Length: 522
Image (tube, rainbow, N blue to C red; front, side, top):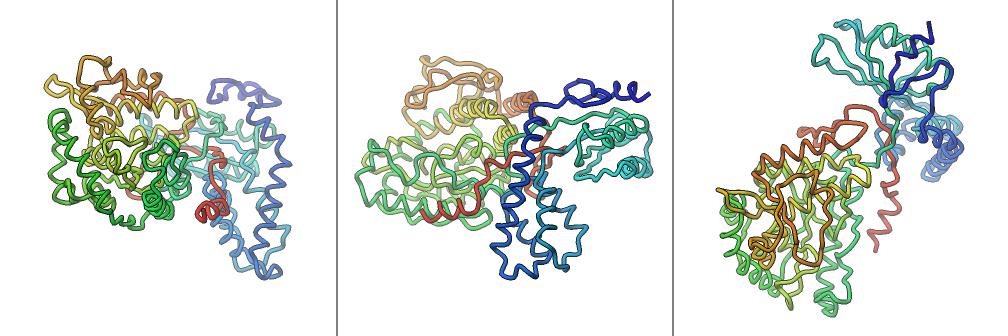
């Protein structure tokens, strides 16, 4: 009977679980061999906690809880769930022995020996959950995560649960048998590890300082390389952006005469071409930007004013950044309706040239369309697709972003119009893109994601969308095709991401607090 039952137990990949031993994935095998590593991490965590504690002899559970919540590893959802459940069972006022703390660390920091299972109840009603939970209690299994939702078709409920233990353990295999007998559609969820990603909007502070290029450091061929006054100005602007935290007012920049003059030259050069070649959605926003944000040739708008304006229009906001971010970090921000923007401006000696994005590119090119609901939704779709994506998927998504948000065109009364910021902030490429010289393709993210592009010359190829709505629908279809062991939804109320199942998240991308402090000093 047991053999027959286990033959009916499906894994997410469709393979079967044997009676005696579950087939371990490469990830499971690696994690099992790393138990010593988990023990070492737990011991190091205790040592670090004790080094921060003034009175080690009177250490209480509430001291442990407070310290844990301030550590980077607490941002990994799987680990956070384990600690929350553990502290709920503790009397936080009681003193605690060092050995007890190490046991807690070893248990909660071990995200490896976990199993996640999905199943559906056979009947509706509150009793169905109680019966299912009794199966876990009977086998002595402690849940680390549980969530439920009504079935779309039947009047029943679907449950996603995670617990400590693996299919190599007798009680876990017996639990599986119990679930197969008393519930339906029992499925082993994948234990695949995904790259770390922000779960709430404040998590953006974890990576916003990790710039790769540009910022205060200039290459020798940069127009401003030998101008010490310009470099000092730029350094101060970058340092202010580096210290910024989500929720704080964006630092004001008092632009000097040379900078305002540079802005005015770019503004005057691009505006006639924009009036001719920009899409109507872009042009409709310009009068409002004039009125509410001081968007004129004689004034460089402040990012705080821009951000407040966009919040009212579409919920998007601007966050200052001190340089170029990685594709993953930049796209992750879009999932939270956050656009990263520089505040420094190109050097006045070459006002119509910049080797990197500056405030002219950000405001003249990007900002207006983030006030358009359809474009804002399209941009967020790209961001949501980047959450937990593999490195290969991030490369494809960055290409989709490049050929749409940066250099996209659309049809308007059968005429091509520009909506990409790289076009709307560059008079030379905007003119060129509307000639017969470049190749044109219908916007298809499946194709754009495979297309390489140059970064130092005009684009030889542009993708043309029928409309923003059509582009958004195509982007949603493309995003759903990306293999990912979970689904994600943005919660506008809490400004956080809702994930539909428990996952193992790598914390390699989270900088330690000491690293952040050292970089801030620099």
